[in-house]
Image (cartoon, rainbow, N blue to C red; front, side, top):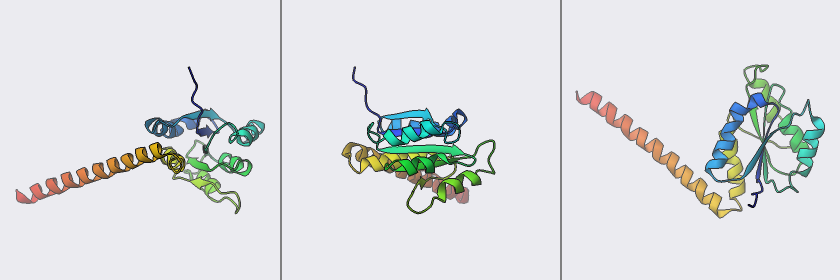
Length: 173
């Protein structure tokens, strides 16, 4: 049986980040995009982080999603090593200042080392952004994303129609 090479690397600083980062894995599964999921701590395993980032491209990865809480150095440090796009997911962790420390640590990267940053705990959006990046060169993934966006539109229009119906009925009574 052939193993499918992952296109997206999902990394996090600690296993306590998994409940948030699971959303990225779930959406990539939904889009049928192969990924890997592991723990790579910028502070506790810096050599592992450097090796991961250094060989990610040659292993076939196209995008890295890096989630981190607190000081949140993982996404930026990985971005400083690899030429792959890195999407940072700030995580509100137990040692966090309402998540703002994580958001600012990832968002405020110096010029020359960009990290795409999604909202606090928004790993699902990171997964969608990774799919969009891959979809620029993969028509099947692009079509899946288009279907996903049409489904979102349909859901919102359905809710708007229901709300209109409910409020129209409220005034008719």
